[in-house]
Length: 249
View 1: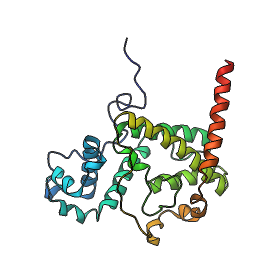
View 2: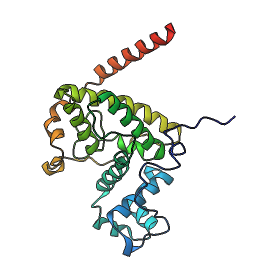
View 3: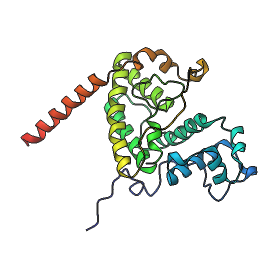
View 4: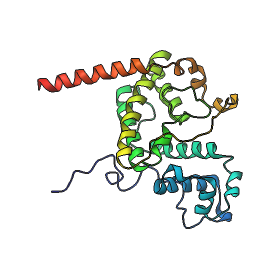
């Protein structure tokens, strides 16, 4: 009897993510074919194969068939490389026909978004833990999420649905805590390293870092609040209620 195929897995999605990585490096892009998208595509492919800890500018240069220093013309440093990789992978959400970028039906929006993110996690299990890290431009976000674009669009959609600022932030915190917690355990079971990375302190972000994300700047005081205990208790009560319902059936 054939095992049921997970519909969110690459196999269930036709053996590919919604949007393929930028390039097929490995054979050597060469200096004449080097650009930012090729570099990011190569980094994603390398991490998919070898894991995040194996990624260095020198090794990535070798993977692409160039000197590591040649990469700095397109990505000024490791943080810029990591941010770019996350955005390329998160772009798969925006190319996924089953994900709604915005919707007045916020519950349907959440369900579709959750499955879209799970598809990314299953397509890139070695890379996914990077998504759940603190962005250099907004290290105060709780819980951390490296994609500022994802946060901005999420919060904007909930505001458009009539949520107050505080309610929109609460929705982000509850949803992200549930989703990231579940998916990190899932990719860990596939062999992904979810231990802390030795990242340098991002220091004080420049004001221009968030210029493209006005809502994040506006909601910084709320996004900085540590509401972990409240989110845990409310999530636990929802689980208990669900289990009580199952026990009565």
